[in-house]
Length: 139
Image (cartoon, rainbow, N blue to C red; front, top):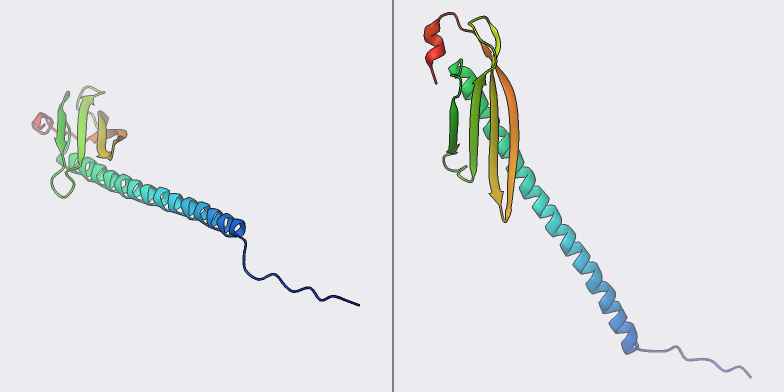
């Protein structure tokens, strides 16, 4: 009459090896994705911090008033931001003491992250609110 087939028990060696290979490949992809995400997070943090440091330096420069033609400055930021450095160059683009935008400031902040060097260049124009020649003499 009818023969009843017994279900197979156990797994073949090939099935086990295939399952381990697929699982290993998935874990490698997940690990690589995690590392790329971590690198992007660190870069984003550094970029945001560099942007804030640049904004603070430019605000400080604006509060000091007009800048002398040819003024240059290149320094590292103090701790805890010592991995960031900046270079600042200013030049007058307008002569006279009339109010308006008369100082062009080129500012570049840079930092190293691993083997890579990152830079953010900024060019801006500072207003000149000079009322007399004494105010124009500051660096």
